[in-house]
Length: 228
Ligand SMILES: [Mg+2]
Image (tube, rainbow, N blue to C red):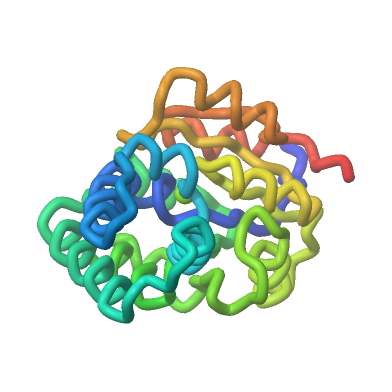
C-alpha cells in the first residue's frame, strides 16, 4: 500500500512556471523603462525584478529617479506585453501533461494582475486547469517575498500552509512560500533560466529543484512536509 501524500494543495506560480513568459517580459519591461528615461537592460530587469509585481518594480524605479513615471507608462507596458504575449507566449514544456497527471487540487498564486493571469493562461490553453482558483498579488497588501499571497491562496482554498507545496522559479517567490511555512519545489525549466539558478533557489529555501515538469508528480508524492 502506498502512503497518502502529505499535501492536499499544489500552488503554482504563473510566470516562468506555467507560462514561459519571463524572457519576453524582461525584454519588454527593459525597453519601456528605457523609453521613459530609466536606462536598463533585460538582464538587469531579470536580476532585479523577477518574481515581483510591476507595481513594486515601478515604485522602486520612481524612488531611484526621484520622480513619478507618467500615467502612460503602465498603459504602455501593459499594451506592449499584451501584443508580445499574444504573438509569442507559450506554455512551459509538458505542463499540461503534468497537470493531467496530478491528483492533487491546484491553484495559481502570481505577482501578475488578475487580468494578466487570466490572459496568459487563456492564451496558452491552461486556464481550464485552474479557473476560478487564481490569486493575484493585487489581492493582498504585500507581494512576494512577503508570505501574504501564499497564505491568502491557502486560506481561500481551505488548506493548511503545511499541507501546501509551491512550485516557484524566482527567489522572491521561494522566500515568500517558505515564510508562509510551505514546502517549495524550485523550477528552472523556463527559457529565462541561467546556470546557477538551481543553486540560488535551493539557497533561498527550495526543498529541491527540477528543470522538467514531468518530474513533478512523483516528487510531490515523495517530498517531506516543510519544517517551520
Ligand atoms: Mg515566476
